[in-house]
Length: 325
Image 1: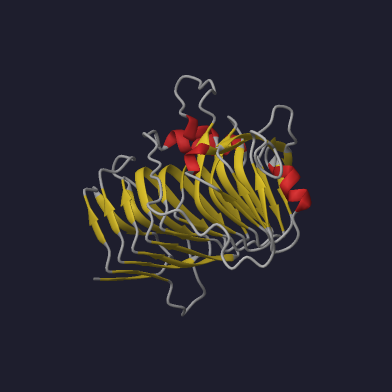
Image 2: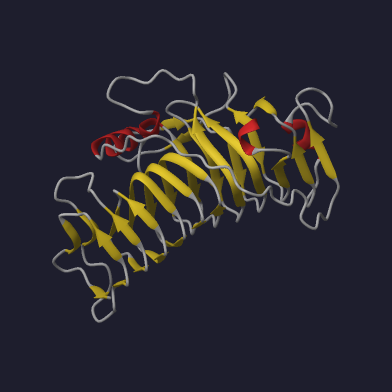
């Protein structure tokens, strides 16, 4: 998988530096949709049942809802239950930040050896629902790590630590991982906003209705991805390889690109892709390497509108794609 070093280098090379746009949802979500269990209220000022989210998690049982009042919660959250964790107010007023001295997740890299990343939130084999929260990412760290399960992540902001000192030549987006999906997980991410380097390995994520700024979305298979009705601002690279399938439909990308390679076969349909390109002369949709077996149909690139690029679509030798409309 990608290392933290590769993450920073890849994003910096694409010059993905932009102003983060984090729109607030027009409507607050139903905080306890058909709640099967009781609600647990968390408030940092002591006005709820608990003062910390971890106290609420310890008390909650499967199907319960934890409502979090506005405030800043310096906590590491490990969630292995099928619960709902929801902000009880505007999401930008309910902040979960990684605590000083909190635990780090260790990963192996074939080229560079082990490295560690700190995540405020880890979901382990959980179908939990997370809603209306702001997750604050430590510099060089991550936001939400999902290992297995099919959680729903809705109306979230995943932001860099505003107090972090950024080295010259970088932006905060270069040095953070808003989401990482591993171990066959199938998360649904909707109506949320983030920046930075997103990685999915051997998982099947769905992204719908999100606002994504200056991001690399690297997805390695096998797995199936759905990207639907998202808005990409300030440049984004969507890169799929190692036997990924799925659909990229009805998205709006500004100064972005879509790459399909290494055994992957995608449907790219009814998207609007606007220039200028962040990479001089670079294509906005590119299909590389033989993507499928002999006689199979390959990727389908249909009904897209591409404007403001020197090169629109590139199909490498040996790759297969259908281009229509």
